[in-house]
Image (tube, rainbow, N blue to C red):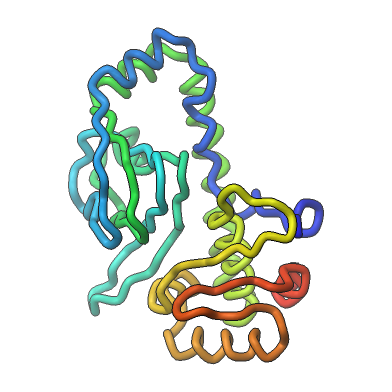
Length: 234
C-alpha cells in the first residue's frame, strides 16, 4: 500500500538524496576525483561526537543512525539516514566539531569526499549551495517536528510514526503487495522512539494482536500500514 496522500513523510525525512543529482560534469568530477569508498560492517562507527570533520560522507548503500550519548551512556537516535543521503556536512559547513555520532545499522557502502574538494565545489557552484541551504532549512523543520513528537504524543503514537518511516526506508525494489521487512534491533527502535526496550516489546505485541504487523525474529513486517497511520494519529 502506498502512503501517498495519507501520511506526510516529508515532515519527518531529510532531503539530501538529490543534492548531487544532475550537477554539471566538471563539478561532479571535482567532487569525486579524490573520493574513496569503504565497506562498513553493521555497527561500525563512521564518526564520533566531538571529532573534527575532514570531509563529508555519502551513503552509497545501507543505513546509518545519527545519535547522541548521554552522561549515563544511554543512546538517543536522532535520525536514520538511508541510501543516497549525505551525513557529516553540518559540522563541516559550520567549521565545528561533530554535534552527534554516526554508525551503521546494517552492512553499508559509504563514500568519503575530502573537505577541500567539497568546499571548492561549494564555493563555485550556485546550484549546490542552494540545494544545501534548502536541505538545511528542511532539516530544521524535521527536527522541530520531532521535538513536537516527543513532547505531545504518546509512546504508542511515536512508535507508530517511526514504524511508518522505517517501512519507507526499508523499501527495496518495491512493488504493490510486497512485504517490507524492517530489520532493526529492539534497542535501536527504543532509542529512536525515546523509550525503554520493554515498552517497544510490549507495543509490538499489541500491534501484532491488532493485526497491524507480524514479526520474524528481529524483523518487523507491516501488514496494515493504514491502520498504523491511524494509530499514529496522523
